Amino acid sequence: MSETTASNGRSAFAQKLEARLGQKLVSLSESRGETTIEVLPENWLAASALLRDDAELHFEQLMDLCGVDYLSYGDDEWDTRDVTSTGFSRGVEGRMVGRFKWGEAITSENGSAKGIEPVPSPSRRFAVVAHLLSLKYNRRLRLRARCADDELPSLPSLVGIWPSADWFEREAFDLYGIAFEGHPDLRRILTDYGFVGHPFRKDFPLIGNVEVRYDPEKQRVVYEPVTSVEPRVLVPRTIRDDSRYEQASAERKAGK
Image (cartoon, rainbow, N blue to C red):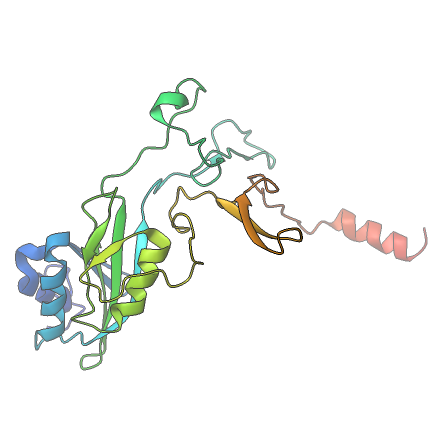
């Protein structure tokens, strides 16, 4: 039976993954020709080694690895409840994570006083996703694990299994603050020395924590709290073709 016509609706490849990973597997999904599996953080290394070494899987190459922040996942700031059924009056509530000023986050303590519901935090906020390639079988696979601790998210390093994970893990550490246990040189790779925070986290302010300028008196670059930029919400404007505008444009050109 072919990979795409297995009797229970799963592809033969998905069934093979379920059989090989067994209890290590949390979930498996197939959508739009892509396969995604999730394992528990304690099985991250064992599942990765199995995917690489199993003769019938043979994912010998790590193509990419990245962090994910699921804070406010599924929420948005578009207000569609208090708008009219006609026209273009859809509004925006600029209170999503990243919009507020640093130190003015909406919490359960101050949210009720302002009449605003705090954005709920999901269980296991941070995850790491690895994209694998089997050159032997011409297959791709997405492997994910969620970090057990939201305060200090971490997972074992995959450098010992796929050396190409080295800089990818440094990038996830820099941008998301996810630590990788056993990494040979875990330090920032994209942000500047002394950078405060992790810029890809959803609660990192969109205007940043500090701004940089050159001080002519001190004759050096100085870092200061952000004061020149205010967080704001940009509402996209849609320009639609209309015969009235075309007629007005034609009349202007004709000198009428």
